[in-house]
Image (tube, rainbow over all chains, first blue to last red; front, side):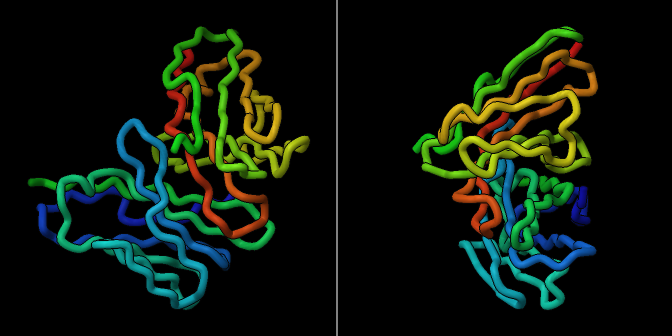
Length: 110
Length: 114
């Protein structure tokens, strides 16, 4: 099965800093999703992207669907302690399953 | 606003024991999924049900069976648990297989096999 390459694997940042993470694939996708998973809970959808080049925001979060359709990026501005968690990307092409990245673990130091 | 509900939340089994993990969704979704999550591996698809009455293997189906009991419920069974099946199991659902609409996840079942 296909696994998406997600980087970095982990990040330790100071509260107030901006965060960037990305996800790459060897395959083209028509949909990119970003999820956040808090400890002991399931992944929760943050942002969905449906068109190459699309830039979508959800509060302090901004995600982009790469032009090549093989990558996506997530940025978090002015991080706060509740941003702590694991962030997953997922890619989808028509008729197929979603494929998930291995996750980026974010720690925010107050 | 229950969404996807999984039971139990935690379970410890001995090698060779059997167990069924339960999942129910209240969003009238057609498709349901079972994943396992292991450190550094992301989410891997075990089985899915595109619609009521159908089930298909995913990436890692060995050692598992599933039942789509009705549109709401999709269960995962371990017939003879092995230590390699120690993992966190997530159930998910979405409107229909093949669409690009996101999956919605339950809170997981944390399973340890001794």
